Length: 161
Image 1: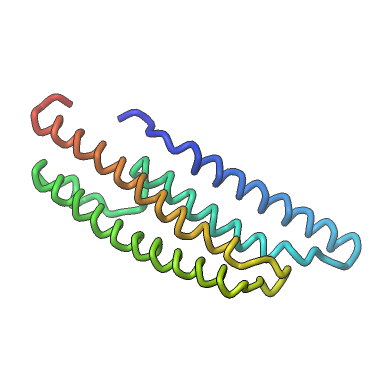
Image 2: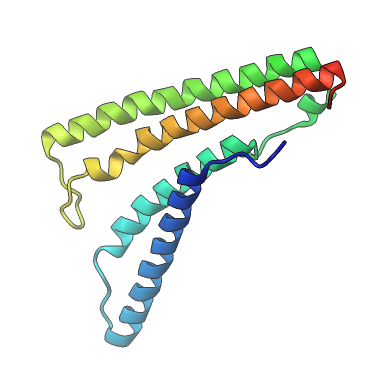
């Protein structure tokens, strides 16, 4: 299988990690030189870490590189492999759909209530909206991965691979 594309999520993850590194390094330098620290670093770092985690999960889902036990996959005959692939996809999508739904509701409520973050006073919905968006991206990437794995399994069953 060729290397599947998930560039938007990969770029987002790389950007989030780079910003975390830069603001953390800047905070350390300022703290040691002035005995003070930036107030925003923790709030932004936590937010960016969530973005990094979900964007990275989307990339891993597309490439089918999530941590898993593959012994069962390797031992099953091809028709049962496809059933297992479908079951894995279905359970993952169900969980992520819950995150999309409840994350979307939470984002909407935070927007309606005009809640502000405790550290910097930014609207909290700006931080929370990424949870359902990136969970939906993972669903898309899982579906793409399922289609690829399904096709490969059919080819292997026919003896084309």
